[in-house]
Amino acid sequence: MKTYRSWVEVDLSAIEHNVKELMTLLSSKEQFMAVVKANAYGHGAIEVCHTLNKIGVYAFATATLFEAIELRKNGIQGQILILGYTEPSLVYLLKKYQLTQTVINSTYAKLVNAQGIDIPVHIAIDSGMHRLGNTQEEFDDIASLFHLPYLHVTGIFSHLCVSDSINIENQDYTRKQIYTFINIVDKLKKRYDVGCVHLQSSYGLLNYSYLNFDYVRIGISLYGVYSSKEDYQNPHIHFKPALSLKSKIVLLKSIQKDETVGYGRTYKATQKRKIAVVPIGYGDGLPRCFAHDVLVRGKRVPIVGRICMDQLMIDVSEVDNVSLFDIVTFIGEDHGEKISVEDIAEHVHSISNEILSQLGERLPRIYQGGHYERTL
Ligand SMILES: *Cc1c(COP(=O)(O)O)cnc(C)c1O
Image (cartoon, rainbow, N blue to C red; front, side, top):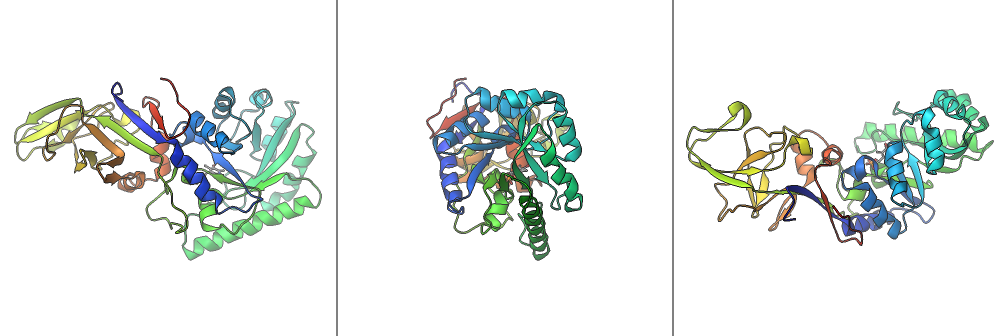
């Protein structure tokens, strides 16, 4: 870590642990599909997928074609489903890298079919989120997909939009979505082979674990965190957060009463203060409005002044023996104190998913616990 300016530490054994915990909610028929879009929610998709391959996970989902190609180029085995739109003119790449494309609706299906290239597809169904897929009312359009000569339907899925909520109305809405989806699938099954069926993402599994489809598509909980602190936490599942975010003090200075720190002079010292410069900023993916405390030598200290693109300043006056190159923890543990990504998400009115997926390429990922090491 000595040579790094700021970095992300990923505990791959925590990811293995989380998969095993989540597996306890699956029937023997259900399989695990790991959602590794946005660089595996900031954790590093290649290393996460290699770790998962080693423990027997052979189904992955990305958001984009190029995320999927990167996995193949790095030797990831198994099915890779692209959950989002891919340009029809790039369909040849799906074939070349053996990827499975989501059919986002019947209009899109015709454009893809017109490329004249055989590819496997999963059909997205709109069961009530009103994002991808055709709806129940468009059943004939959905059925027509099975007649397109170049598209081989190997799966069908939908997505729940309020499965994270345990509010009664939202539970009703989720049950309606489940019912709608099952209805469409059953009707199709009378005439066609629909392939594998899947509906639940992390909260679909955590809150509706009695469901029993072929796959579950697990993103955020794979990484051992909840989207938000308010979410219902399944008491049988014990996650281990896999990611820590750290930097270090690269400069220490004293400022006098009434002196200010940073752009806009938004912080003004009310007495003599010891200030440290930390080389991380919004250009690394920290939200600019991030005003959460950070940890130095196990003590919580505040960020002072505005966060810059590449640096920020903290007030270390209260830290005993503070020294140059002391580690600064933004997410993770230090001497028994802890800051979770959920704490930060709450603080900036977001969700863990956003904070993690924003962590930039400028931050090297340091892996522990797994058997996989990336050279920098
Ligand atoms: C992102 C995504 C997931 C994973 O969701 P989590 O809540 O992170 O588990 C699953 N399915 C689809 C279609 C998605 O877009």
